[in-house]
Length: 138
Image (cartoon, rainbow, N blue to C red; front, side, top):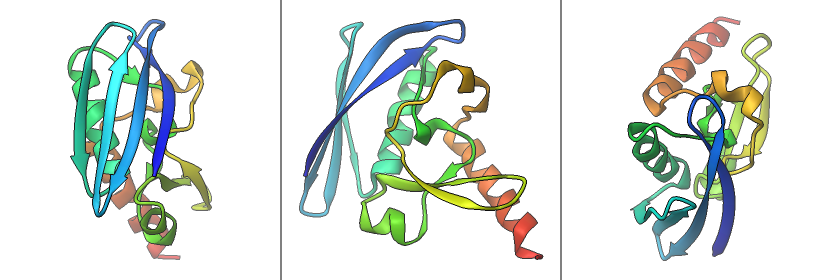
């Protein structure tokens, strides 16, 4: 499996570049190689693309950039058959009012209008717990 995605970088005020993510699956190890329009390059690896994307996001967040992709949204969570069968490339986007789920590709682009819906991986986990708790009582 080899896939490539281009995702815009946002500095909190405007789109200021683009990152290219190259996904690679070798046996049970997944890798994401990245390069951006500012000349930064590197690689992260693991056992699930969603979690590797979280590492890439943290790296860029630490230097002041957010990735404009579905996997950055606070209401997108990995888990279940969709994530398992796609090695974390697919995840669930949860409607926080109804609890309904839609399967999304975590590397799909989002508009900069959604910048306020982007959260850290830690906040995504917390949001997931609260959504599960909210809808488990139904």
